[in-house]
Amino acid sequence: MAKKEEKPDTKGGKGAEAAAGAASGGSEGEAKKGGGLGKLLPVVGVVVVLQAVITFAAISAFGPKKTRADVHATELVTEEHEEMVEIQVVDDRYQNLRSGETWLWDVSVFVQVSAEHQETVEGKLEVRKAEIEERVSRVFSRAEHVQLTDPDRKTINAQLVATFEDVFGKDAQTGESLVSKVLIPKCRGFKIEGQ
Image (cartoon, rainbow, N blue to C red; front, side, top):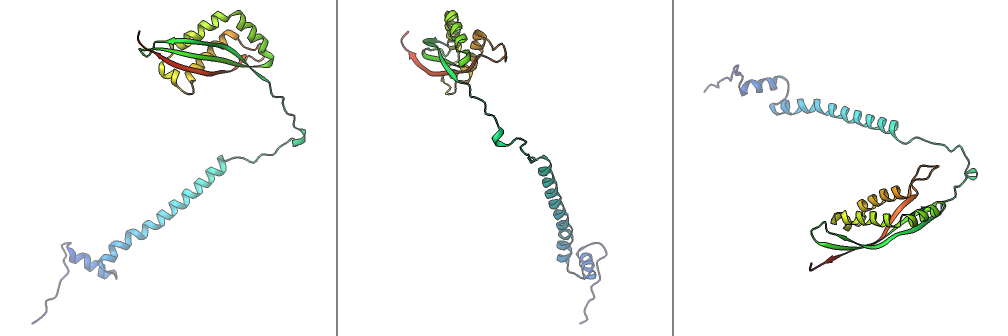
């Protein structure tokens, strides 16, 4: 029997692809795999190198700068640290009804002032004692329960700082508050039952 000769399919079927692959010197699988990957690897390599160069340039431009001291360490003058004094403002119990329940808060409040302002603060504390106690009472009675139970007491502390800045005033020379810090070493709540 005579062998039939296979004619290449000119309609675009599998035979045409195989014939094109054979004509280029490779098989069908090699034509599909090698073409895209061979072009993609150099592009990815260029992108990675470009990214490394840009990152290095950004770090070099915006990173820490070298500095040099103009004064020798032996010539440095140390400032004297201001001595701080703690003054007790209140030590009392305040009622709070904000949570829908009655709570009694046992509270101590101190202010920290510099030694040079101690007399001024103590004098104003003596003269305006009732006003200060009433304003501190208002802060605790109006506070939300979550603010009173907050371990840092940030909200209560901020309200007391504003109150004491208003009552004690500011330093005439520097314009800073006479009170450096508000300390609340005791803030214990007791739920009152059976009312």
